[in-house]
Image (cartoon, rainbow, N blue to C red; front, top):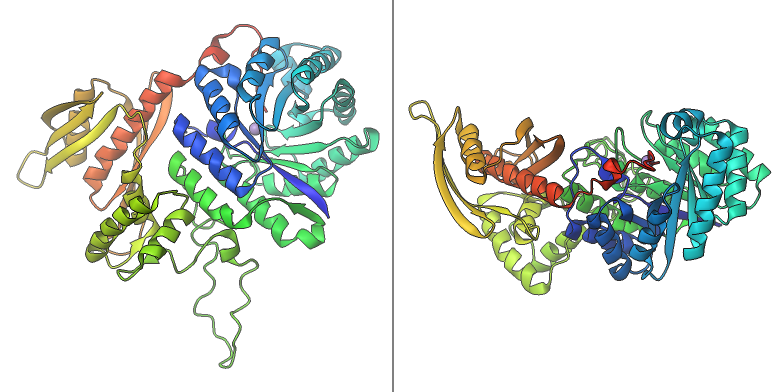
Length: 517
Ligand code: MN
């Protein structure tokens, strides 16, 4: 059995998914959960990009034990390596990660350098990195549109300069499994012994197939993100690859170190904190992924369960049938469910939540995961939020003009106002925006039922735009007007976070901007 390594880049590449804003606390929670899942490497960010990213990497390196902590640095900026190393050097195991464009398209468009010059940049960057870090990963951006001979040469340059792992990135998601297999085989034939890694995007729905092809051809590490989140069609999804290699481990003769029953809790946590949903039919973590043909006819004396399932959902931390908790669920059952959903509450908090759960169970026949997430979410407000909704009353109907009375906490101060609108949601939104004195454009507003039944909770998902920045706001509740207002507040807090923390240095710095893998 060979060892397969999982390199998780949810917190660097994954968060490039449009509208994604995670606070520092949220990133740290995700990193801790990734450590529970026992991924091999966590890449929490690009420290030179902003003070916030530096702080996130620094705190994760200090607090998250187990995985290697990797930090990205531009090959063209020597300063990046010092900053990146300073951020992660306290980790028990740290890795600097640098990259150059490999394809002619990328090289000419973004760097205007010859292949020979790019080789020099790579060699000198890797040497700089190796002076600081024992582990240096080198990525070839857009490797699968590059000439095979140039990829081989660049890999050789990197290995000679001291790169300890070399990653081939299908940055634009255009490769076919046969291309990947061919490229990996060619590299390993010409530069034997290279510790190869693969980084795939899912533009053609091939990120999993391409990652698998690379491993079958001799690569040993996969870059991936939880739920496959990332820019455009996203990255290779960790949960699908993790389950695939667990299920077919004997045939593939590869073994990962993932703690399989943490796959689902990790997926739920990332889903909840990013607000990026998962389609019902998504492999492994979609809500329908393990719903077999429930009413299938079978022999009267059949004792074994029907052979639908290729992998036991429980092994992945999914407890089907437990999606709904009844009124009679025990304190222990609630505690277990909450930890499966990715929450880590103390016993006192679980007991308080249990009281709230029992109250909700009196009002609702079944309490679903989404209901629990609402309860638990209220208990764990994101720290440092600037705006909080304290009170909302809305009047609407066929006779009255829709109007809203709102009480907010803004920077710790309580403010109150009232206003009219075209409908109840419009009245609430107009009033809130006037109170916070900022007027982002509402570019999307959606309501979806998240749980079954007439007492279903509605999930509100909206997108705000302010000065070219997009953020998504989310909230869940049985009252969709109230949930809409909470989603708006969520979005406003995220806008505030982006304005306060997003580094713009990477975009304004004239020298050395490089498109990333
Ligand atoms: Mn990428």
